[in-house]
Amino acid sequence: MAKELAMVENNDRGREVRQYLIKIEQAWNTPELIFARALQMANNTIDAFKHRALEAERKNAVLMHVRKTYTAGEVAKELGFRSALDNTMGSGSTGIACINTNRNFIGIEKDDTYFKVAKERISTQNT
Image 1 (cartoon, rainbow, N blue to C red):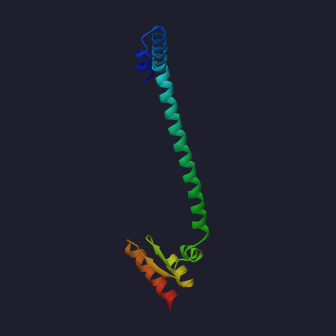
Image 2: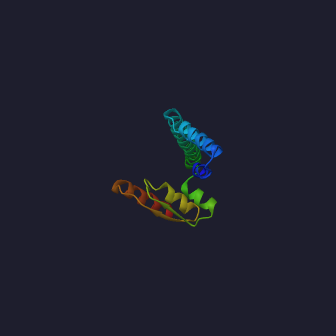
Image 3: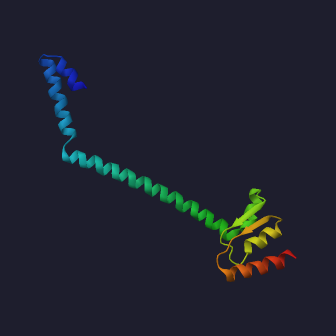
């Protein structure tokens, strides 16, 4: 836009401004500066991904600590939930914890052997 305005001013000063703007544009578009800007953009993207990965690692560490420290039933009770869903029920420990904390429990297990074990453990605990 500035180059066009400089062209409107059809005198020496207008031509001088136009030539100045052309030199700035040429300097901006040198291969070195184009690659430098691209490299800076790539570094910014990498830094953003590193930051997101670090945040994910922190959240995962907290979740792993909670998982090792508390059963799902205890977490549900602490959060005020009345039901817990365990989509990898295994041997039914979460179901037993829910029974002990007076919570509803929904367990899902695709392995028949584990399902039978969990069913037995939960029914024994429930009586």
